[in-house]
Length: 477
Image 1 (tube, one colour):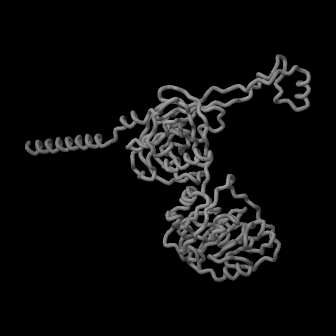
Image 2: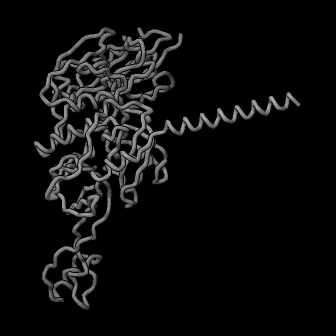
């Protein structure tokens, strides 16, 4: 009996300790109520209105709808029926599209560019239910930010601006916005990661969180536990159209830099090098003499671009830019984009398996920064003899080099079974570098191919349809 009593006492003690632990854990969770009370008045709802032509207002009784008729019949009916004066475009009712927040007492409001894109009129609804028409000060599609201005006739509640650079993964954060039109909805979570790159978003190092974000939250603030805005909710990753645990916010450090430029100039300028880069994997790191995968490998430089003028070359691996380590290739656009055009920058690169520092002047990112693709060459020179890669190559004429913007290279005419086929070479590809050596002729290619080492990672620079990249392979004995 005593043994049973002891077990009862032990079990009761364990339960008490469990309850105490649960209570302590509950006390350790953040209480967001005071933060929300203080910050919510500075959060706003954004709605827009578009003017659209009213086809019905231009028609008269008995006149058919002319839009779907061939031009000949349309002209006949227009002549046969009296014309009505041009009516004013019909206006759509304002649609609630997103959120925003007030950053200054004189009425500057920050939101996402995609919230107000293509709007003819923009309306801001305040926490006291006033609705004011807003002026668009400026927008920056590349960072998905827009700056608005409202005249509220007095002091406005404002948010506290924090530093997103101080954020850490695992830190609690909170969002306030209008998902699906439900104003002042509050959701909370943690920072999942920093410095995320998203497809087609090269110039924003996003903050990833698990805060529930849905349509209507866009442009709303992301707060830390000190009640400071450290991000702007912008995107979600979803396969269903709704929240799936991955949301992304624009860092406030990036946003405030954009705000200052929009206030001053109405537009944003970013630094630019004029390079095509790719990730450095394990095999490329071995080929270029790096102890581990790191940096941004330059696959191509734009002729007479900032990098080309500054001395950077295809095959350089950028390890640092202005003192910032480039760990992933996606780190480079973020670092360069924040530098003012015309600024001199120090770039640390690995070239010929040696570190060197290059000074260059950063250029301005063009409005159209797409790289035009060019077709493959029309080889006509005699083909090379067989080689260890199993490819047949031909010389490039001076005209082909000029049209392809290359200083050297040979064109692949035929790919037979072998290492070249295994790494995906195709007829029409241009090989400019092999095993870190410039290939300026068929004979140079053949000689380099003969000397390729066995059982070691070998790099090859290939241009396909105007875009360069490095591939790696190994040759067995």
